[in-house]
Image (cartoon, rainbow, N blue to C red; front, side, top):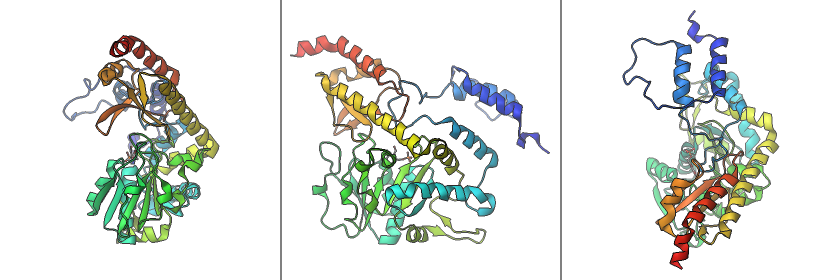
Length: 411
Ligand SMILES: Cc1ncc(COP(=O)(O)O)c(C=O)c1O
């Protein structure tokens, strides 16, 4: 018996205790640069790592966190992830994951109706979900080309490259949506990728275009979960897609790496993207071989909160974004890129000279930046239901007060 592999209440409680503390990170200075020959022991390791891992992390649950697509995660997912790590199920084979495979298919079954799909599977992120979708498109619909807007996520170009498909971009309109008038007339050999929630600005492409190409894939990595909320109608048309990708580690508040690829005809799609093997009891579907039980924390979250609990938190986030956008719109020194479509606010000072000064003064973690058509913009992403929008508003007001003389001079 090797005690290192056994349930250790003292050690696990120590880990949980450390999670509750305040830790100040000192970077990696206490971690050896070469592989240690002799270990320091597991309890000692927890003490050392608390400063490095817990102390050195970005605080995605902070009231000022309003910048990235990365949400805080509910504690029930921490517990489920701990169980996952101890059980180490491998969903490649039913013998090594008897119930975990059923959990994944049950969770997928819960999500598919909202998107008009019939089934699918979990992936470690939407880059892999998009790759899987375009792989199915190539096999099932014989597509030779991928068409997406110039604001589509880089994973679409990457997937086209990996699959040997020609990649063509279509311009976006002034609000960041794919411009339908610029689509080629003939899409009979094309996979059309529509984005529901672009990475830069959260724009939702015209989903009414679903069905116009040999295959339509909706990359709903960010905005997909809106379908569970009172904002569901923003994604109308998604049900006519052939495939839909959704990141659970974004607006479903899941620990990384968690996403799903859904298919309208899952039987046909799975047949096209499955491989058998002498040592496998069931075909291996999709890109990954061995893979873990990422659906378990998601199952726990939905059981704990219900659809309603997820929807309420997303709706809160949408309200934060709308409140901040309304504030921006009222300031004559600021410009709003567009009315936020899906909880992402893109804005900038009218005077580009004050951009960097503002960036350095705004609360840490409260904004990110993006470049659209060669112009730099601030970007807020409402992924944290505990954001205090007032903190950013105060910060911006202070910046505007200190730079207002500059604006007055320029009049
Ligand atoms: C629209 C969109 N698609 C795909 C992705 C890639 O997802 P992941 O980072 O989960 O691979 C992202 C990531 O931000 C995204 O915003």
